[in-house]
Length: 108
Image 1 (spheres, rainbow, N blue to C red):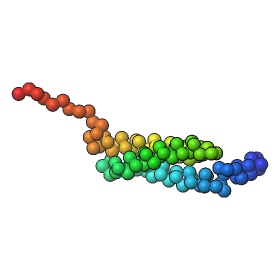
Image 2 (image 1 turned 60 degrees about the horizontal axis):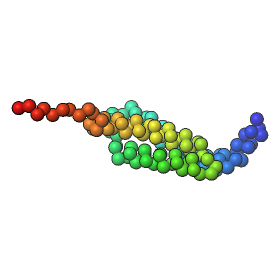
Image 3 (image 1 turned 120 degrees about the horizontal axis):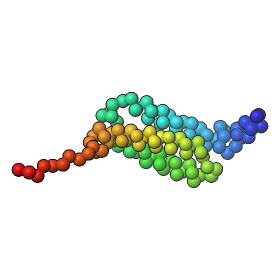
Image 4 (image 1 turned 135 degrees about the vertical axis):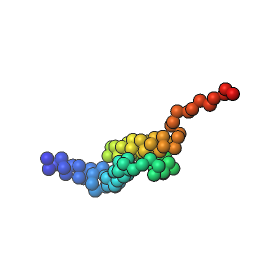
């Protein structure tokens, strides 16, 4: 057990590196998004939520391409992408972007 912990501690993605602490800090975005689910959709910023979606998508690709692969960062941004897309759908529904279109009457 001690040798397994020591191997992780000294690994290229262990707690001595930014490959570990960066994703740990980014879990704050996920936590904030989860807390925001209790707020009314009128308080959601569509621009900021869209920016967070793009940000997480880009960093998911980065986490996959960087060597060694950073699975912790990938999991963090996949979770954030899910939360932000849900928030974005709430915002879009509240602002009428996802509502079914009403047929206009052409009868006179």
